[in-house]
Length: 517
Image (cartoon, rainbow, N blue to C red; front, side, top):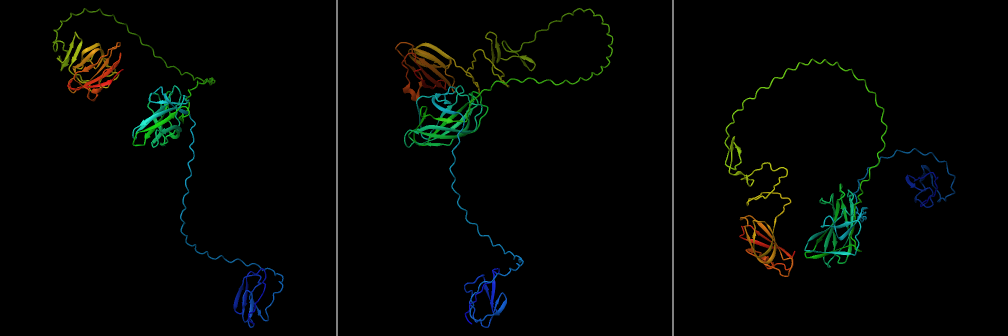
């Protein structure tokens, strides 16, 4: 019988059914076959095995009957040993790392909680005229514009400082952030400025300030007023006295290779200010009341006094002898001859190898009370304060390496100067002269060559009237100032002329130092 198909239904507990036809095995992997699982040829003379149970297969193809009841499930066999785990394969190459994402924007800077200080231009600081006033309260008034002209690449500073009379600053400048808003704009379109803010502080009104911080530069290019902000990180400064001060410095640099103008605005609706880390200075409060004294503890027992040692007996005092009578005074001896006087008249005596000597270079004049010394060598200097009561004439000799303090110069005064006047340089360096006519000025007694002397003439016109006078200076060269030399024409006006010579008057250099005072 050829091309016969077998239909069968194995028990539900059998997962895999082995079908053999003759010696040829067929594996059936399903519990319920509704379609052919295989084609078996020449089944007439072959045995069919189902789970190793054999029997002949004859006749026509069978039709599946109803499923019989399920048999009892057999015992599950023991689990066989697990097989050896296979070798792990090689690790594959690591993939390319992805790109890092963009950094997020920086957060907004926090603000300091210290005093708000206003840049009160044009108010001058009462302690230092080089600073404008930095104050916790605005001075009010209308807007003020400060126009500053710059040369090519020039840097200029505008200084503001606190005044202890107006704002008491705490003894500590705290570290933190100073936030400054500045109204600024350029003179014309195309100009550029870099501006930054510096913060300094000083421990006392007479002390120099030290820098605590400086901001980054902000570029100013707008020709219309606009607000620019600056963040200055400052370090702390302690031990500030009650008259200490803090400074805010605007540092501006012209970025162009040509002149430019920077405009800064203050007061009114264009207030420039800074939020600082300064705080109010509070004086120390009064000392609190002293608490009551606690009770005194019980005094301990005093130990017993030890026994005193035995005092020895005092020996008897001897009898005082009688005082003898005073003997007669001896005869006075003869006076020796007067020794020789060293040196000549007015010479001061000194010890010269054990002998009295004098020298013509070391004398004393009893009439003029003048001591003359040719030279003096002070090996250890003068200690304390050396005072000189009288004139010190150096006779064209040098004072080397002095440190002078509180030096005043003598001023020679003369009125009614007219026609001709001789300036005697040996008299002094300053001459206050009132003119009463046109005058020619001559100079005499300049110092020796290679010794410089300066002479100042204060020439004053009459205090009344309508006639004013002029003058000329004999032997003086005014150089490029010659065309500007003229006298003021007004009552009581003073002109200042300065003259120098370093070669005994061989060349006298003249300068018009000031006019119309």
